Structure formats: C-alpha cells, structure tokens
Length: 221
Image (cartoon, rainbow, N blue to C red; front, side, top):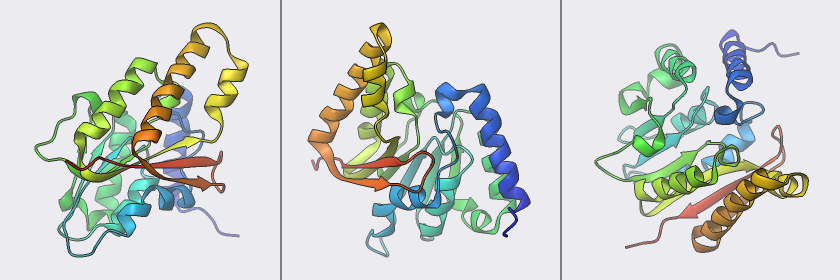
C-alpha cells in the first residue's frame, strides 16, 4: 500500500481545515483529483510549442491544479495565481520554496492575494483556469466574476472552470424562496455564457464528487 507523502498529507489537512472554516469560498468538498486537473488544463496541454503564453489560475487552493499547470509551463511562459485565502497563499508559497517542480517555475510565477474583481494586469491572458465555487456565491457576484474572466482573457483565449455535476438542478428542486432565486439566476447567467462562448464540456467521473469542466473561448476581436 502506498503511504501518502508528508507534504501531501499537510496539503490535505490544510484544505480540510479551510473547508470547515470557509466553505462558502473554499467550495470544493475534497482537493481536485489528477483527472480533474488534467481536464482543467486540456487546452494548455495542446497549445502550439515555442510560443510564450500567460496563464492565470484563480482560486488555486492547495495547488492540485497548479501542480499540473507547472508541468506544462515552458521556460518563457508566465503564471499568475489569484488566491484570497491567506492559509492557502502561505501553503502555495511553501510549495514554491520546497518542491522541485515548483521551485524550477518560481521565477515565472506570481501569487496575488486579492479578490479577482480587484485584480488587474497590464496584459491579458491566453489561458484562465478557475477553481472558484460559483454556485456558493450571490448571483450578482457570479455575474461580476464571469465579466472579469472575459475582461482578463485575450481574444481567442481559453477559460476553463469546473462545477460539480447536477448541483444547480438539485438545488433548484430542493430549495425555495431567496435560495431558489439565487440558484436560478446563477443558472441563467452561466447557461447564457455557455450558449455564447462554450467550446467543450468534459465529464470527470473520477473526482469527489464527479464534475463538469466547462471550456470557453473568448470571441476574437
């Protein structure tokens, strides 16, 4: 039987500690699986070689998807990570100081402890990969975040984000009043965005719980 590495155990403990304290912003029930990380980085993995790209990861948490992104970075690429939770920020910095795959990309990676709505960049990004739990937020905030995604994304760039399968349909069936209205508004906003810009949806069954990964391409021009 394989024994978890001490660093991996520490990452899991940090994740579950923050999950208990801040479920509304942590959102995930468990750290993302390797299969989910691969799906989230699908388009980054097949980008043409030799052309530098700028990558933005939003809500990296303890870094399971970051770990996959770092494996795909080329020497001239840039990675920016936007994470609001100070415990996760501290853990990410530790990983950049202690793990070999992270250390070799440290010079091309920057962590920003800031809400996405307040984050700005001098240049847009080729790839945006988001782990934000949109279904946990007020509908108005979801609209702000989706607007920010596409403001930061280059024309022709790819946005990838995940959501747990069937969460909104189930909540719409089981809730009433203001919560039903909130979920319905989020559902309408994301469905509209999918109709306009979605290019692919991946089903990731080996994850806790199973998830969809939505991929969108920003309109050219």
